[in-house]
Length: 301
Ligand code: FAD
Image (cartoon, rainbow, N blue to C red):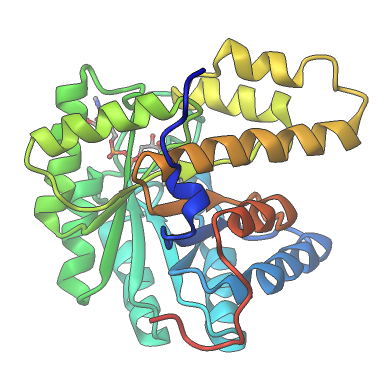
């Protein structure tokens, strides 16, 4: 019989830190759902919560008002996502200055995808920031923001090699980024191999794994294909035949997400970023398994 080595995820001696990502709501019903999720997850005292910026810069106003409401009505520390797409430097600088004036001190800076969608050719705005590294430098010129950027354990689809991809990450760090959040992935080995490659290049900032609880397998698989994240056959097999069985699907989704997160804890990971899709239940359950418990409201340290 093989005796398993002690697991950090069971010892209770492995405190973790989490952050949660939300998207700005389009309708009043979606807004209600978002606020219910924020209120459910807030007592877990995330390190920060981030609010995405719609493709092509389409949610500039909604991202801003969601971030403003988080600041005004909660003890949470919001990070606003911002991309280079569809706006001049002057316009982007105004958005950044507005955030500074509002009291926001953390930006997730991205290049963004072309308005025609993921995979279309990227053309910078003629008067805009050309790359995400340029954007990071521009933000830093306006205020001493904390800046988080993206990282791609399976390589960004447009990067010609892992080396080029890691060069791009390095350029963002040289410009002032101090944390990266990864694109979601399902094979933990992929993330840990990537981490080795990044560390071997002398990059020592936190590379926080971005985890997506699979609320809807078909939707996640289709999104994954576009972003270059692979969907392993074993994952598809776990959801196979459950299309008309939402109750079992939810249980399987929880089991799959718990397995991934706890395995990462066993392998030394302590920081997690959750793509919540504005839904709290599954994320709350995983955080509970990670050892987090609801705390009375107070500003996270
Ligand atoms: P970058 O870091 O700028 O580049 C990624 C890779 O692509 C690098 O390897 C770089 O070398 C390569 N590359 C970039 N441009 C070229 C080019 N022209 N030719 C060759 N190679 C190139 N999108 C949104 O619209 N709104 C969001 O709120 C948002 N949030 C995100 C949060 C996270 C944590 C992540 C991982 C992604 C997010 N995205 C968001 C998606 C992101 O905008 C896209 O993946 C986009 O395609 C790349 O932007 P980036 O800043 O991640 O890429």
